[in-house]
Image (tube, rainbow, N blue to C red; front, side, top):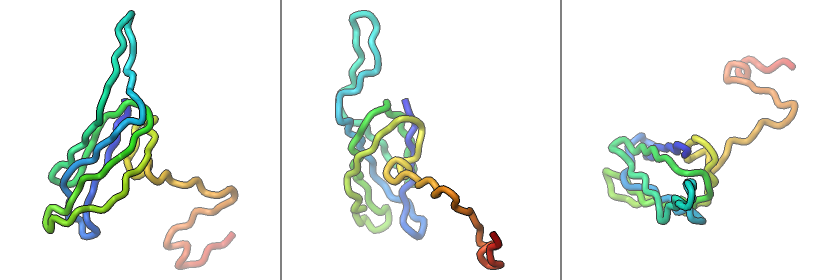
Length: 121
C-alpha cells in the first residue's frame, strides 16, 4: 500500500471540503494464498478533514482521481478535471499529478540572495 496525501485550500488559505474519489483502471489484486485470491472491486474515497487535508492508503496501480470538493465558506464548487495517476509508493497527490521536473544537466541552483547580489560562475 502507498500513502497518498494532499491539502485543498483557497489562495487565502481557507480549507475546501468534500472528497477525492480514486477509481482503479483494473481490479486490484491484493494477493493470493492457496486457492484464495483477494480482489478489491470499486472506488476508494478520501474525505477531506476540517483543514482540507486527506490521507489514504492505495494499492499500487493506475487510478482516475475525481474531485468532489467545494469552498466551505462560499459553497463554490472546485472545478478540477479528472486526472489519471500512477501510484507506486508514498507520495503527495500534487507530485502524482505533476511530478517535479529534474533540473537540466549543468543547471545551477540559486537562491534569492544570489539573484539579488548577482551569480558568479
